[in-house]
Length: 117
Image (cartoon, rainbow, N blue to C red):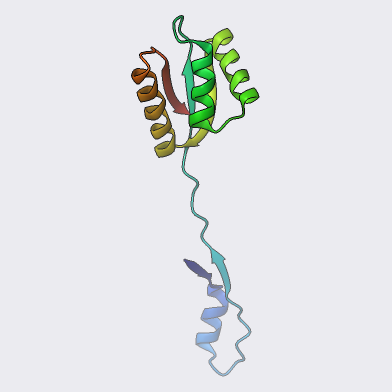
């Protein structure tokens, strides 16, 4: 959508004196859409899920390399929580659901949460 900015003072003068030359230039302004809010997808530590399963899950659902996935897994293991990625809300919710379903199918208690970034 394009909005035009009009100088009202010049417009009033032109309307009052129609014989004058029209030197008014209209400047188009492009309305920029707002970016959607972003959400962090995070894994929580537990004492039962194997580290290798966590690494494979991060690689599979967050498209991380083996090294990146291992670093995230170690952060989860040491600090209790690790950020796997930051996404718009609908994508973050989908990834969280995929991870939770994958963990349940493998009978692991791995937990995945999202929070606003």
